[in-house]
Image 1: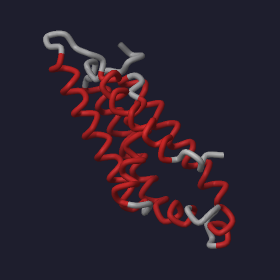
Image 2: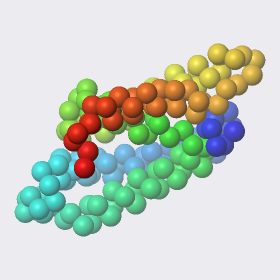
Image 3: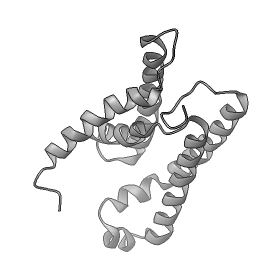
Length: 154
């Protein structure tokens, strides 16, 4: 079940761990919003504007890796939610990280909750791994994204 992802084994210990991780990641994301917006100009311009690019990149990479590690340890590999929703959120609300980060978080939680409800009800009383639902949503999206980017890649 872990390799396809599931929320069935949730208990209060995992809720507490997820909440602490979410609070830390949210605080750091809030702190980095303006620097991330400036970083959209490019590394050189961001550094010229006063952003410590090296430490920002290290901090973001470590924070994201820790968040992904906590999420995967709690509910398995539900990969497409974390890959698809930020792309969709950026298409809907633009590149401003002050809006993009909360929209991505809320959108990801909403989609995962909907996928979990579908997984629990489609084959009731059995339970389908939620990773199947997220893959059915994410796979076609990435094919569409690749078609859109045809000729721009490389």
